[in-house]
Image (tube, rainbow, N blue to C red; front, side, top):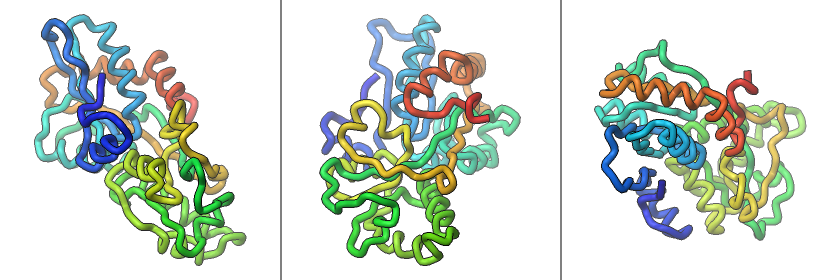
Length: 273
């Protein structure tokens, strides 16, 4: 699989801002069937591997991924975009598609969870070393929009912290006053921090594994204040290949799929329950 929007960090940011998607590399021979999976941006790396592993056991099948903010994918599905499976980063956007009639509520299953982390540029120009520093005057903070799952989770985290005696109620509004942009998906938040366009951002823990971890610094969010993000998945009700869609969902929930998620930094659902 490959990114369709070009290489390099600058091109990556431009592609993410434009709504980049992932697609399977064209095989030498045309596949018998194509499975289209809509997946939240935070699942891009894990589901790229997931699609390849699933297709390896399904001769003649190609998995094509479309990744974006969950709210964007939900809107596309409710506008009639063809797809076979939807994996969301929260229940709210999955419910929006259920309410839109494209997904049967009885088919929705949780398959993973995630946690938040504060990410800083590698050189940490603002000199941040604690969560309290997010309230420093003049700090440039980037968050995902509240309509994006990680954006709402970020607001929930700030509300939790503001309710604690050591931070007080002024913490959340002071931090939010430092926000210089609200982005459409979590990958743009991360890219802007990597590029030094922000002093800090809030992303998922799974966004900063592997090689990415070496390009940024992290501020951990303690368990009492962190927010657990729940990821639901379901086949699209009007899929032209419901058997294949069901098998993909079962693969994600099975041992191999759960191992891929764990390796990508997500908490497999069986460990989360």
